[in-house]
Image 1 (cartoon, rainbow, N blue to C red):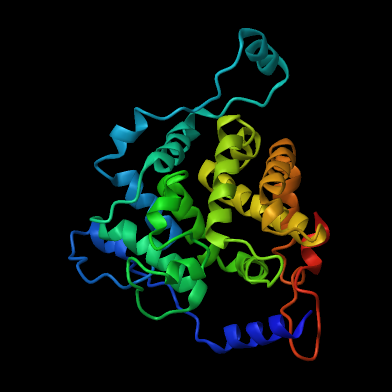
Image 2 (cartoon, rainbow, N blue to C red):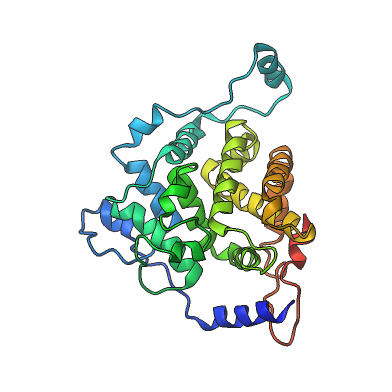
Length: 299
């Protein structure tokens, strides 16, 4: 553990945590209350429910692609030896995920913008919403002054995944380690942009039906998708750390992560679950110099 990380960890822990309001802005919106001065953080469940109830959802649903076009021979092979079909009861939630991926950030929609602010505040521990545009977005790993530009590839689903990763308590240690790595003087990378790449990988796995088996088992395709996204990010960080990668290697690493994770969905989810155990990722202290990425090497 280097001294810079220890100092950063102390500073991080010294800042009061921002607690997610029990009545987040999406709930206020659903109940018809004014959201002109929304400041509360958005929860993942609230964000998903917001899109599920949105009047524009049918428009996006009619434009989604739920599977990859294959040759007749390949289709026959997959029918016999490929992943199982998704349980019909999960189809609506699967379609919701694909719809959110097409959904572009709407600046006139205060709820969507508040999701973006939630990500910023969770990363920086800011107590108030930041300006909508500015160089501060680069500080958390977007490119340029407007995050909407980067979000085009994964739509609002990429934003919801970021909300999930940064607000889910069981992944806090993993999130903190990966964000710290993104700030490294030599191994730095744009955190939010890389997060969007992990969403893209998870979408490919979903469209290829690789997530069907764990989703059928758990009965929750959205939860499986979110966890697989985190698992992909976890795998990325492991390869990045162990291979001493730099930004010049990012394209190759992303391809390697996609190839590994899509072929090993069960292993990715299992290894992620192991590292959410409270003993799996110890919190570094001054008296216990632990390498911040020791546990990432479990992959």
